[in-house]
Length: 388
Image 1 (cartoon, one colour):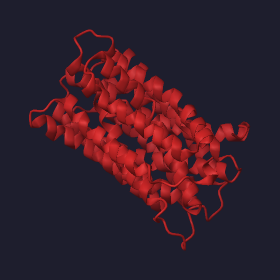
Image 2 (cartoon, one colour):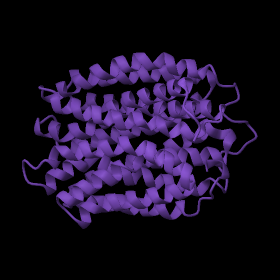
Image 3 (cartoon, rainbow, N blue to C red):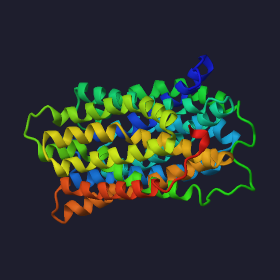
Image 4 (spheres, helix red, strand yellow):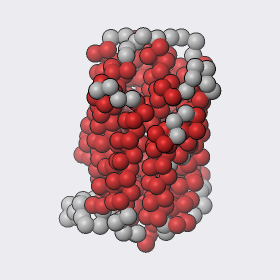
């Protein structure tokens, strides 16, 4: 693995902080907040699933929007703007209890999140690739793991109820966005003008199609526990059990550790072999609350899914770029669009599954089936020599 000098560290920090703002504080804070907001009577479980669906729809739209924005101007101006807008939308949730307005805010939050989640890591990946340091790219996702721990802490310490639970999260997101927006703009100025890919190259081909199909299943597979595990814990565990709150802490801690571990695993095993191991562990994690309902299943799900889903993202992004190196930014946008599209199905399926009288626990079988699909397609992916 290449050495990480001050310039590399600054680039990684810029994107990592952006992921803290949009994906940890802006998006995943909703997961530990959900059971608390249900207890506050702000909405019911069906409405909570609808709000998650609106957010994931926005995420898909944002990823699609990132595709035409993957230009020097879009990266220099559009990416910092989306980051600042996302932090502002997180703050806006403090001031309303109206379910329709909350849906609009979660949709808009998802759009800005999708733009940043595509463009910030892809920008740093391209920047590192120009300096022969691609193997460092996975360290960007340390920001997401650290951000998940941060939002868990902010949710736990807030003394308020209802929409005011978002206030500490927003007050943390705003200064972080103001700090890293100019850093990302500066990185974009260092990219060549043709970094978005040549017109003659094909975005889809036989080498990367299995990888894309696997990623389609990965989005649906991981989103169920990352949205509903705290609510599932309430279904399986007795009142007062430490894992009712602690499941999110274990998920976030596993996520924080996992980025560097999977980054190293890809460098050691090759990204394809590491991805196969990743999907197998993630499949086991989603299935555990069904196989062993109770504390063991909840904890295993938190650790295995929390410790693997970021690896899926970084290994897939790196493999895709290695299989089609002149389409790095466009492939990143396409991958996140697929991931976002399949995520969108998760809350919708859970809403209808539970409305039909089934338990939230049994809905995790949908995620397990999606990850089995992902594992089978990943088996057909070719190893790219440059990912070793």
